[in-house]
Image (cartoon, rainbow, N blue to C red; front, side):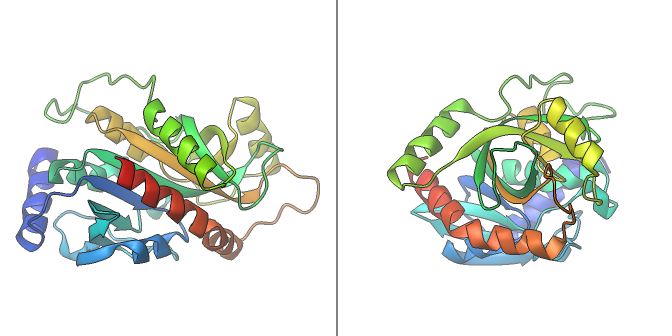
Length: 272
C-alpha cells in the first residue's frame, strides 16, 4: 500500500471518531505531556487504534492523539512522538505529521527536550529554534517522491517560520518569560552525546542537540505546513564537571519548565 493510501486510511479512521477540523497541531516532547491538561478534551485516540500509526515506547510519552479546544481554537495534540532510535523508519516517524496535515491543521507547534552546547544556556531555559542541522539523521524524504505530498526538492531556507518566531518573542516579552534562540542539531540517539560529539556539534553551528524534531520539520516543510518549534534545555552538554546525564533528569527539567512553555503555546494559539 502506498503512503497516500496509508495516510488516507488513518485520516478516515480518525474522522469516524472526531468530525471536527483541527486548526493547530501540537507535538509534545519528553516530559511535556502535562501541557495536554490545558486542552478542553473532546476526544482521545490511542495510537495503537489508528491504522498504520507507530506506538510510543519511551517513558514520558503517553501515546495518544488528543483533540479538543485550547484558547478557543481546535487543536490536535500528539501526547508522545516517535523517534528513529525506537527502531522506526524515518517515514514512520513523520507519518503522524502527514496525517495531521490531511486532517486540516494549518500550523504545527513542536516542543522537545534538548541538551545545550551554547555555554550561555542553563537548565530550564527555553530556546526558540530558528534553524536546524539535520546532517546527522536520516532524511524522511529519501526514496521515491510522492508528488501529492510535496516537491522532490523542497526548499528549507525557512523551516521555522519567522512570523511565528516574532509572535512568540512578543508574547514572551508580555509574559515576562526570558527566551533563548538558536540552532537545533538533530541526532539519532539513543545514546547521549560524548564530550567530543558535543564539541563537534557546537563547532558546526548547533546551540542545542536532541533526538527528535528535524525529521518532523522536514516532512512539514515538504507538505507546506508552517512550523514553530521550541526546546526546553534539560541538560548542559559542554561543561567541565562530570558529564553524566540521565533520562530521569531530562524529564524532571522538562516538567519544571513546562508551565512557561504552556503559557506561551496557549497565547500563541489564541493569536493564530
